[in-house]
Image (cartoon, rainbow, N blue to C red; front, side):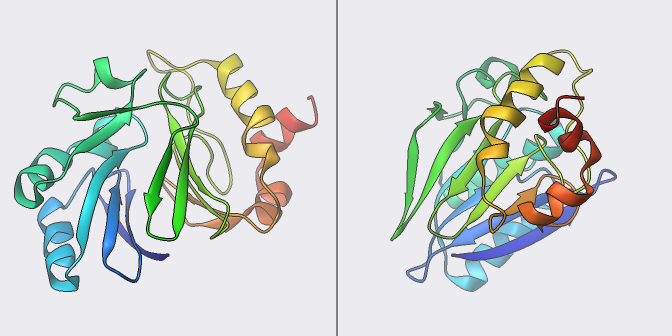
Length: 197
């Protein structure tokens, strides 16, 4: 899996274009710079299978409609976030669903806490996980917004994120990637939950 990161906006949100050798690809969280992303896709000759939104917040999805129009590909979001995404999603994702990327697979993991329909996208083969605003390298996503929940975030960390091995690299919605070994050393909010503090 090839991973290209784009950083945009006042919040330095991450968008990822992931692709297989054949050119089949997905775009994850295009909040900003849609024209730059479209240009990259066309220059690389990629065949975009869909635009995956890890949650409904504007800094992760505002660029999606233009990309959908220009590249003729569907917008995908978890069903629990679909009602809050006002641009109209084409495909509703569910927990446990698997998206194919040639010889790789992305498992859709519902990780509520930041939003009810927040997701992570996990590849056991590539040992990577695109975590949106669930978990970052040094902290966790906010839970004080309208559909956030401290308890749901706690359960997502305990039941999902803490199951990933130290060799799994997270690609978060903001900030730099980090492997879980590093997360388990420097992410204080993660450690407070898993240690029961």
